[in-house]
Structure formats: C-alpha cells, structure tokens
Image 1 (cartoon, rainbow, N blue to C red):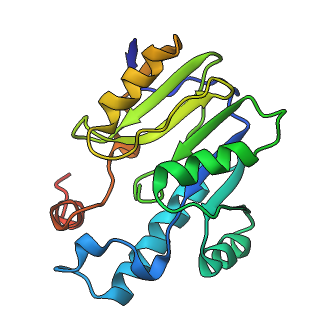
Image 2 (cartoon, one colour):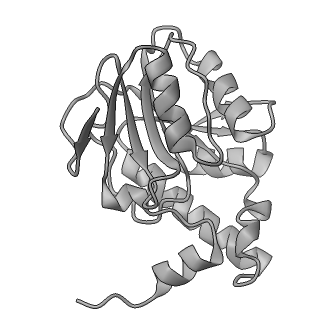
Length: 199
C-alpha cells in the first residue's frame, strides 16, 4: 500500500463513472438545514463540479432517472442507464455495460464540492482509493476491470474495499487528496463547509 498527498500523471483511466440519484430526492439528511428545492440546487452544483473536474476524460453519468439523464446530456456527458436500485448494484450494472475494450475505470461520488481534477488517479493492476476525510468512506475508486471486484459502498467502505483489493491480489494505493476527500452528507458537513475560512 502506498500513500500520497499528490496526484501523479498517469493516463491509465479511460472513463469516469459518476452515479447520481434523483436530484429531487437527493441529500435528505440535509433536510434540517435545507428545503427540498435548495437540496436539489446543491446536488446539481456539486455534481457539475465533479463533472468539470473529470474532463477531459470520457464521463458517464450512471442513473435510472430521466431528469438526471437530461441534466447529463445538457452538460455534454454520456448517460449509462441502469435498472438496478442501490449504489453497489448500480455500479456493478454500469461496469458490465462498458465496452469490453475498457480495462480500467474511475468511480467518483457526485457530492465533492471541492473537486478540481482526477488526473493521474489510476495505475495498471492497481486499486486506487481516495477516502473521505474521516478515513471511513470511499469518495473515489479507480480499479482495473475483469477481476470480479465486488463494490462495497456503505458503512466503512474504505476498509471493505481494501479487503476486497487484497482478496483479488491487486496492488493498492490510498491517496489522501484534500479536495477529493470532502463530501457533503450531513448537516454538520454542510455547516462546516459553509463556515467562513480564515486566510
């Protein structure tokens, strides 16, 4: 396992998958702080930030919602329609639909408001993980395809993905990249993010 605070330049990743649920029902845990309309606006803004960070890579929005698909097309990115519910089944279904010539993929959450770039995240025969700032979740996951890797998003997904990597005998690197480690899931996340920063 290697750890790094910088992103190395390596054009291994041909495509980026960004799973997005229905914007209108996004971020329900932020309900104490934001109205449904404001949560929808926030979700779209963060998703747009992630899309821009992923350019010029080939981007696919993984969804099963027509409004999300229309939003993706308006942002000039591909839509990968899946019928499965839940993050892990959706990602698994999306990966199976990719061109068989694609041998590596990067998966990024859509709620990374500080995302700037995914350049260089990805090495041959290596699983690269950018955890959340609590070192519990998986904000970005880059991996080679064809290994029957089981996605383990959910509680303590970082540990679960590390174990899955070892199970398949793949190399592993944990990349602590601050702008990709900040996600917005809870009211505390939101309030901390909105708090004025001292120079």
